Length: 123
Image: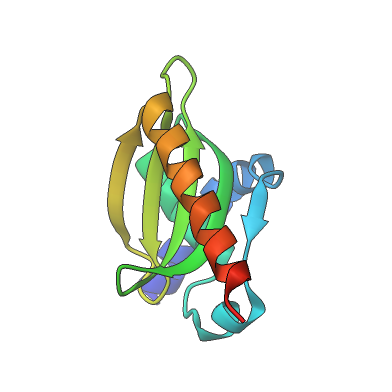
């Protein structure tokens, strides 16, 4: 009973945050979404609890490094670069929080583009 009450209070408290965060780029492959035990809004709430002044810019559900995660890019006003926050798609716990400088973001974007190009080239 206490857990249900806590969850309801948390949802009410986070409702304005969730509403304000509705407009960001989402990449959620259907096959992966079916496997996740945590919904994307639940994962987003965990991110906002960890980076309360941040604004989610984009997210994707993916398997990375043997982990099944929601990966969020969060921009914080007055701070250069982004915070990359990973939330375990099975437990809802934040498992990684790393600040990426603009140079690091650029390098990661180039590596992602190269990886996608290589994947398209495979028959």
